[in-house]
Image 1 (tube, one colour):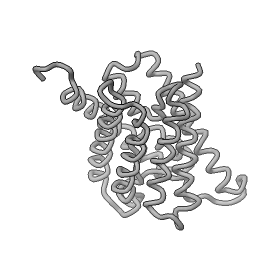
Image 2 (spheres, helix red, strand yellow):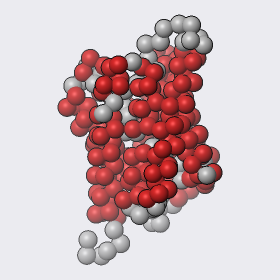
Image 3 (cartoon, helix red, strand yellow):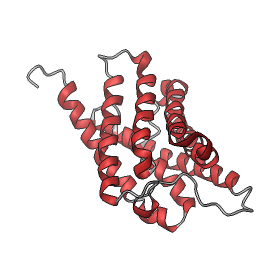
Length: 226
C-alpha cells in the first residue's frame, strides 16, 4: 500500500507543479518555464518516492516497465489506478485555487488538446504522432537509465531532463501529455472539449509506451544474437 500511496502523491504533485506552472505562471515563464516545471518535478520525485515505488507517476511508464518485466500485472494495475486518482486530486487542487475557492470562472487547468484546443493550433494527426513518438522516447530513456547497465544514481537526472526536452518540443503541439493520468485529471475540470479529446491522450501514450518498451528490449537485450 505504501507504493500505491507514493504513486498517488507523485501523480498529484506532478499535476500540481507542472499544470500549476501553466495555469498560474504560464504568462511569466512561458513554454520553457513550464517544461522545466514538469521535468524538475519528476527529477525531485525520483529521489523522493523512487526508493518506495520506483516513481512511475505515469500509466505509460508503468506499462513500459511491465512489458520489460519490472513489475507484476496486479501491482501494475494498482499503480495505474492510484496514478489516475492522484492526478485527479492534483487537478482539483489547481481548480480550487484558480477559481478562488469556486467563486470565479476557470478557463484552464493545464489540460491537453488538439485542433482549436492545441496551444498553436496543431491538428489531431500531428498531436497523435507527437504523443506516440515522445512517449516512446521517454520510456526508452527510463528503461535505459534504470537498467542494471546504467548508473542508477543519475537516473532521476536523465529522466527529468528528458521530460524537459520533450515538453519544449511538444507543448506547442498538444500541451504535452506523454502521461494519460496527467491528461485525465485536468480534463475532469476543464470542460467538454478536454473530455472529448481525452481519448487521444490515453491511446497515443499507451501506444508509445508499448513501442518504447519493445524498442528498448530490442537494443538493450543481453542476448548477444540480438
